[in-house]
Image (cartoon, rainbow over all chains, first blue to last red):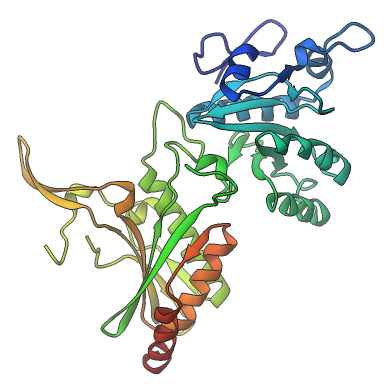
Length: 273
Length: 94
């Protein structure tokens, strides 16, 4: 995690992928405005106002969000940012290979139509990703959950899970296109092939759209191969089907968790070879 | 590679209805190591398949897999003719 300076704000100076506003403007080709350059009536910048008034959980979610985007290969401008002519700011902006993603951390009180519509103005200029809270009883309230799920239909959503035991973290969601080599318009594509093999039938899934390395919030110093992420998704689908059928899934391997369906490539012997 | 075991889905009567296996369909190459001689499979991300081997009610399960994939927000391409064929044969064998 990033070091912090005396005021408690993260110090990103050691990270080459953390860029300044000039570089962000150049990469995106947008007339970006930094929150540090917008002055309020009392002379403070919007960034200073935000830093002084934001909650600890918002601050933590933003810090983890910046780290997450850095870990999957984005360049990040970590301060508040908007586009000239729009009256709204995102918490930071992430760019990668002609993708521009505005990222906004929204606390549960701000998950409402007014705020969401205001933030959605930035979708004209790039992709939009919300970081919403999860993991507490209040953040899992039925109405809030419905609002959060509805947001997933028009923007990417990552969940910042507040966990008092294991530590808070950005949870993995499989439908957030920011983690894939695609955009929201192009969607995440898979292909399903169906085949009868004797008495059994085989239903195979393959990803046509691929994930970025370390896509599900795995540390950069210990990268997890993309295949393990796919296996995790296959297992989640399998478990979901079993749940809907009222059946159980029995893990037969010695290995814990989703690793039970992955083997090292060198141990493999193909029946057809 | 096709593992024999996989992860099993078991119905209320204790019968295995489906298995999940990961298949790596990359090219198998011979590789001589210091201590061992092994075959290694060179896989790209395009060679990774999640295979649901269905024993009972294959047509129904194929539809459930499809809807589960879509619930995860993924777009799924498939051959409708193959699905209807699986439904007809799956129901008769299932």
